Length: 362
Image 1: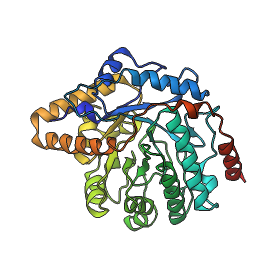
Image 2: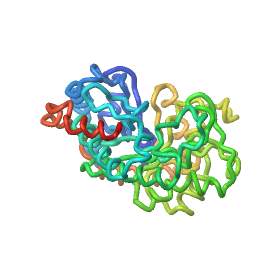
Image 3: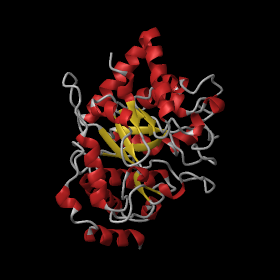
């Protein structure tokens, strides 16, 4: 059975990997890393970003008995409020600016973003947002969406994804299944609820995800959101959403990654369970394949211990770990090696991308 740690994508604090994490990442224990501004010595300088990623990768020497695959080196790079890198990296407006523009422009923006991300050494961008912005009071999605109409938003988001994935070895991730656009609270802080009937959910929230699945998207991220018309559990922990609807009804066979399991929406207090460590087991059994832990190393440790205990006691858990590890291996086999491209970094800031940004703003 694969190690449960192989299902984790891990965040850390500061510009250098902590020693214990560096040791485990270096031998290939984790699926990969997620990066934030806090992880770079100079997050506005493209060359320094590349140097920092090079330093991280210099310690990656997996156990030769394992199948050597590129680690996931991921970042949230949507543009607008959720763009971790700035300065010499082109600073893009929110994707809502594309709502009334031709899809071809969205594809060009995705291609430009991919060129810069690959130059720095990343191989996964947690974008595009597939949520539809239908609630003006939504504190977390808003202008991150590609529009307020599901069909138009899907068209532009998928055009953007085509551009993003035109860069060899760089992959995107659609989020947040089954749709975060109608929430009134922030899942970083509390557990949101969307009180729409199933037919409306299908017509609005699910349409962009259905189209992304038809386009063979390789990774989808879950929403820590409750949809009472379908299930009283949040989608990240809902077998109804992740197995019955996403896998069986919609036919998705790619990788499902949780939103950050350090978020307050999925704490024991919000969910009415005895201990936070049980969240990762419940999410695995619901249908998640990979798990984001962006903030707290102690919570990551408890989650790993919980999966190990559950696997010792349950063949179902062992089977799910093996199934998810296989999906992760397929996804990682499509990634580039995550090495910065120095000749590109020397061209930052990129004049053509700055001109494209001006089209975006008109």
